[in-house]
Amino acid sequence: MSRRAPELGARLEALGRAVGLAERRCDPQLLAPARALLVRAATRRRLSPDSTVVALAGGTGSGKSSLFNALTGELLAPTGVRRPTTSRSRAALWPAAPAASGAGVEELLDWLEIRDRHVLTTAADGAGLAGLVLVDLPDFDSTAAAHRLEAERMTGVVDLLVWVLDPQKYADAAVHRRYLRPLAGHRDVMMVVLNQIDRLEEDAADSCRPDLIRLLADDGLAGVPVLATSAARGDGLPQLRAALAERVSTSQAATARLQADLDDAVAALDPLCSPAPAGKGGRNAARDEERLVQALAVAAGAGPVADAAGRSYRMRAIAGVGWPLTRWLARLRPDPLRRLHLGSDSAGLSSRPAATGAQRAQVSNAVRELIRERSRGVAPAWQASATAVLETRQQELPNQLDQAVRSARLSHTDRPAWWAVVRGLQLLWLLAAVTGLVWLAVLAVFAYLQLPGPSLHLGRAPVPTLLLVGGLLLGLLTSMLARPFISAGAARRRARARRSLDAGVRQVAKDSVLAPLDAELEAATAFCQALAAARR
Image 1 (cartoon, rainbow, N blue to C red):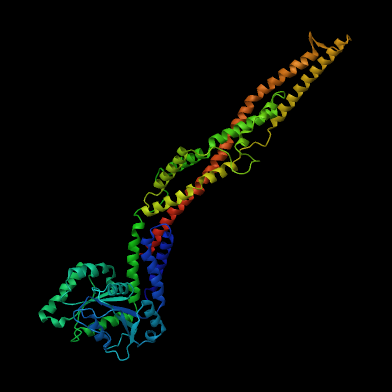
Image 2 (image 1 turned 60 degrees about the vertical axis):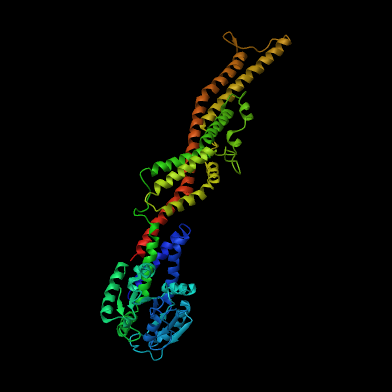
């Protein structure tokens, strides 16, 4: 199998890559012939590569068994005129070369499931046929279904097929339509023999062969060698032996057969490739990606969670810098983030609102639109594969979105510097108010005891009253002045939380939708490239 073996090996390797990429993605029945060919090719290239298996095929009464006996020079096959006489395949081996009689041929025949085998010892005109394994097949039109199945099986595995026709049936439309025309792709590994020409007048014999050549050309078998023979008289047998010897001497029949089978396998997989290569989609692909991210953000509750982060900041800020006499009220209300089981100290699943049916539908629609846009020019089988993969991934999206929300930076742990300033001022105003209150209380006790008390005035206003009222008013005023800063900080916190949430959601979209989709599209591209490499 020498001269074209490297090319065949490269093609088979490329077909193997293509089949591997299409596994679990495309129709198994469509891939089955290619898988079977890869197994058959590996076995045939290993078993007795210097042998050439030639099968004589034909219908009842074509005389192929007589031709088999004439070629071998021995009466190995029973012959008949009207009814089938070959019930199972039988083989004759030309033993001139050591490889033809070695264990390799025996193992090859075991693989071919040919039990009836005969090693020739005194084959007539056997020069040049060393390594030939000639097989007599059951009749294709046998009334026994087992015979027909055996003949069809063997034509799928032999290296060279010699189709034997008789003058009465060579133009039968059923023979050409059912048997010969489907073999058009294997014309390089076929020969046709017009047998039993001894039954024709000389003029009729001369016209039958050109007519058969014309019919074969109509079947797509132009160029197939056509020989006229007579097993009874020996006409054309030297030419047939010479043609077989030429095929055997080059040891190329097995390789040519595998090449032809490979052509058929590649053609059968062509529907999995479209004329346009797979790519990143049309001009709307980026728009559809953004639509998907937005739909996922809505389903994840990014907006409400970001609002909760802003409210959480506001509550903590009020509790930290608000009026000391009222800020304790802020601590009585639950933290919005903790209510959702979110934040740095939360554990387990969050309690954010689950996505509604409408939100889930928006996600599904966005995924379908993304598949449709990015898979423009991809064969339908790969689009279906991508859809199936992403439908499975969509079932995991709720948990992944929840994890993205929990991983986002939501809680506020650091304290801005201005909080300390305001808090210090609030403590100062509170101290002033408490001092004024205590002073007034002392003055009240002295007045009750009718004793002169420590009184101090600033202008006409008592200092204790100024301290009490001023401390309270300045505390309220400081709280009011801090509110705009708190609101601005809450807005920044909300915006920062939303950016973090959007980044997490975008990562989920990339990992669970875009990356799997790209993997499917890249597999489609690699498949078509491998299939192109497997093409002759």
